[in-house]
Amino acid sequence: MSGAAAVSGAVAADAYRKGYAEATAATQTKLAKSSIPWTGRHQAGIESRPQAHANFIALDLKTGINNDDMLRWMVLLTDDIARLCDGQPALADPEPELIPGATNLTITVGFGPSLFEKLHITDRMPVGFARLPAFKIDALDNSFSDGDVLIHAAADDLQVLSHVTRTLIRDSATFASTRWIQSGFTNAVGTSAEGTTQRNLMGQVDGTDNPELGSKSFAEQVWIESGPAWVVGGTTLALRRIRMNLSTWDSLGRADKEQVIGRNLHNGAPLGKINERDVPDFLAKDESGLTVIPPFAHIRRATAENPQEQFFRRPFNYQDRGATNSDLESGLLWTAYARDLSKQYVPVQKRLADFDLLNKWTTPVGSAVFALARGVQADEILAEELFS
Amino acid sequence: MKMKFLIALSAVPLFVVTNASVANAATNDVVVTNAWVKASEYSDHVAGMTGVFAKITNKTSKTITLVGGSSSFAPMIEVHQVVDGVMSKKDGGIKIAPGKSATLQPGGLHVMLMNLKKKILPGTVVDLKLAFKGTFGSAKTRTVTLKKMIAKTAESGAESYSPSPMPSN
Image (cartoon, rainbow over all chains, first blue to last red; front, side, top):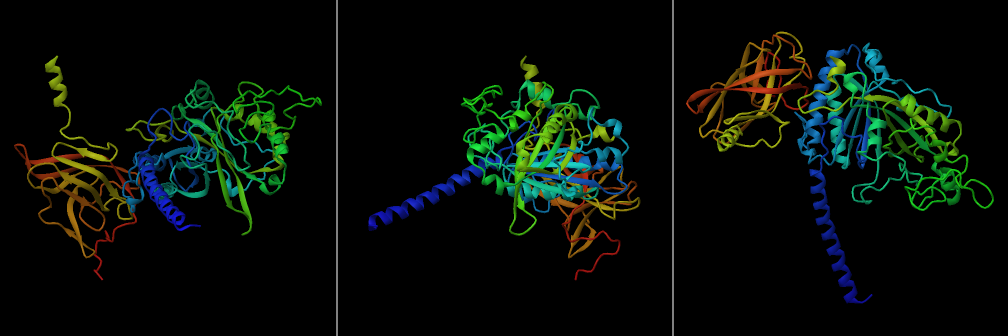
C-alpha cells in the first residue's frame, strides 16, 4: 500500500467516523422527539408499526386487592402513560435523566380472565372472551402463560424501554407482582424502508396478510363495538410464545423452506406469484400435477375459510438463552388482536394445530389472553368503568 | 367582530404551559408542576402524616412566600425543611425570588400534611390548595388549587417521617 493511499484511507475512515457520529446524534435527536399519541378512542400500541423493542409484562394481583385498589393502580398507570409517552419522566422518577424522550413509546394495558374471576366481575368481560382451548401442539410453560394484568410497553430505544419497564413495575408493586416478562424485537428504525413487512427469525416475511393500518377491515377485525363500555373501542389479544427449532430449520433446503410456508423467501410472494402482496393461487398446479402451494403449506392452512376468520398480527421476535449455556432459543412473541378471539382466531389455530408442516419446527411454549381497555382522553382514567 | 376577537384573546393565558400533563396549576402568577404526595407507612392510616413535593415557579415581579395550604385530607399543613436528615418547620415559609423556581423534594423542602383525616395510599388523588404571600396585583395573598395530585411511593430522599427525628449521623 502506498503512503498516499494509507493517508487517504485514514482520512476517509476519520470522515466516516465523524459523519457517523453526527448522523447518529441527529437520528437520536429526531428519534427521542418521536412520539405516538397516547390519547384517543383506542389505546396506542396496537394499530401502529411494531417498534424496535417490546416488553410484555404480566402481573398477578396481590392478595386482598379489590376494585378500589385497582382504580388507584389505574390512576398511577394512566399518569405514567401520559408522561412517558409524551417523552417526560414519570412523576417522582428517581432517575428522570434516563428519559431523553418518547422514542415512539407506547404502553398498552389489558386484563386476563383470572382478573375478572378474582374480582368477581366476569359479567364485565367482552363477548366471547375466554381462556384459549388446549391445542395438541402446545407444550406450555406456566412461567410464560396467563396473568391477571398485561402491560405491553414498546419503544424504538432499548434503554428508554428498560427504564419505562422498571418504572411501570415499581408503580405497580403495591398492587401486583410480576408473573413474567417477555422481551421481543424487530429491526431498528431506519434499517428497512417504511412499510416493509418484518421477517421472523426463520427468515420468512411475516405479516403480509394483515389488514392495513387505518383501514375499515382493520377496524372491523380488531375494535370491539358493543358490550361493556370500558372495552368498547378496545380489543382482545392472544399472546403466544412460539419457540423455533432453528438448528433443524437451518439444515432444510431453501426450496423446502418455501414449500413449508407457501411463500418464497426473497420477497415473501406466494409460490407461483411475483410480488409479496399478490393473492395466493391455491388451485394452481405445476407440470407434474401437484399444487404449487402444497396441501401442508402454512399459508394454505392459515387462510380464512370464512370472512370471520381474520385478525391482526403484530409479532416481535425473541432470542434468549435456552435451557443450557450453549443453547440459544429463538422464537416469536406472536400476537392476535381480534374483536372476538373465539370466532376469529381459535378456528384458525385449531386447523393449524391439526395439520401444518410448520409445526415440525415451531412449538408454542407460552400462551395468554387479555382484554385491552378502550383508549382514554387526557382527563380520563384507564379502565375506570371496569373497576367502578 | 373585532370586539369578539379581543375577548377571545384576553382569555388566553399570558404564558404557554408546554406540557399539560405535568402542570397541576398554571395561574398568571404561580405555576406548579410535577406535584405529588408521598405514600408510605406514615400516610396509610388516619392521624398519619406525609409530604408534598412539586416545582413551584414565581411568575410575579416580587418575591413570593409559600406559607401553607389546605386540604380535605389534613387539618394541619406546614412548610418544612430537612437539614442534616432532621426535619423541622420552616419558619417564615419558603421564599421564591421573582422569575425563580423552588423545588420541593424528598430530603429537602416540602409541604407537610399532618394529622391525616383520610389515609393516603399509592394512587390516591389528593386535593390541595397552596397559600402564598406576595404581591398579586392588588392582593397580598394567593391561593393556588392543585389539580390531579397523585400519591406515589418513592425510594429516593434521606428523610424520615418518624415522630422522633433521626440523628444526623
